[in-house]
Length: 99
View (tube, rainbow, N blue to C red):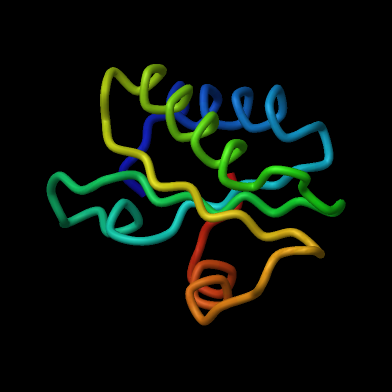
């Protein structure tokens, strides 16, 4: 996994502040490959409760985490009971690493 312990902590803190204490976050995608270089940070944020404005929450998470990671591009995928589940959700859950 190509994130430092400090970066993991920054990500977890941002998710808890914006999405709540019960939210879980998984890293998936190219950042899991220790031999790769570059790439954005792909995150799956799993929420136990419905989300009122998922687009706003995803944008806020992406912006805050990107700033904390000094401008690194961050893609946020949300999973909540009221959101449509897609194949990418299954892939992220199966291959992702819980932070």
